Image (cartoon, rainbow, N blue to C red; front, side, top):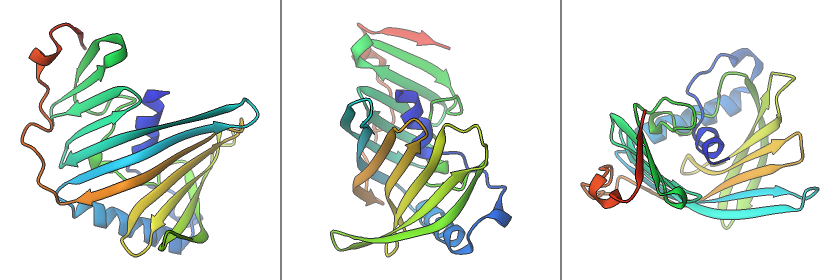
Length: 212
């Protein structure tokens, strides 16, 4: 589940279904991508919710992300991931374990360069509703899987149309599960501490370190 959150939250920067998509939706997502790529750094706090009424599941937690260029640090559900541009460190406090691997392209990892690229292979998207949320105009774009065997009914990406920033991302599963990520704080171009993306192995001397 933790790895699914990380992969799903960031997506894959590949688009191959232009002809099937709403032009307005595509243009808005392109603007969000351009805006994100202009930032020197981002600092996010987000809420993660998992809900399935049929199964009686209602979970909520918060996470944080700071990123600059290729480097990032993501904290969610008791897991801290640090990528220094070469090595990815996944720190699991509950298990007192650190997993170390080269690069940030393994399944379950994230890539800030690909952040907010919603138009992924295997989806078509549509212009959806406009909501006024706490004085902000949030336009939703609906992403519909083209694979009939997909376990996802659709995704909804809620975009602040004035700031061209992501506000909310919703995944509706065919099993009735709805997963929602809502960004609570979105700071950009902030000066980050120099050690933000440095893994200090000495601080985890009592952890099991697994190197792949």
